[in-house]
Image (cartoon, rainbow over all chains, first blue to last red; front, side, top):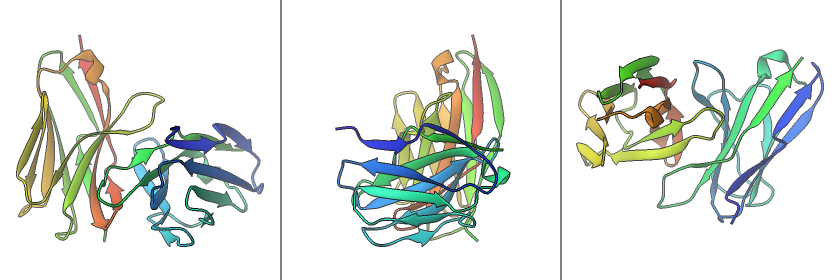
Length: 112
Length: 111
């Protein structure tokens, strides 16, 4: 049981490049989340999903897109990366009746 | 709007002393309040949580108190140890299963 995994662990992009971050969970959780963590600003919710095929905007959705085609996967896309998107990205999941969010190990993204 | 404020941003205590971190939230409908601990380079992990029908909850050296009327809740760590050094985040739910986090408190426990 791997829990929540994220791919890749590290990535360096040039301004304007695109990429997709993958989050996978093997706990059959309905709810999945993408956060970004910047120094002094805590964890800010980018997008989230309450079930397969559904997505919703969080606090800071601009510049990101997401998809939840399969229940176990939640993808975060950057269409045209900007230096302001340099951050550590965490994925999390939970299920009905638990409330605790289980976090992945994070992806450190640098945009030059 | 949906907001959680957390104070202080940094806290330094002597080993054995107590530490208190405070949070306020904006939505009176919130009813779930977790606290997460994040060690350097690691993922956040839940350490304790409380629901709105409870005023206080304890788990060994950590406790959380909630004042629904004032819309604030606090984390208390007693007999602090060096391994308590980490960043602590509070959060509140703003709809079913959606959390908004505070900005974090960096706790340093000096040996």
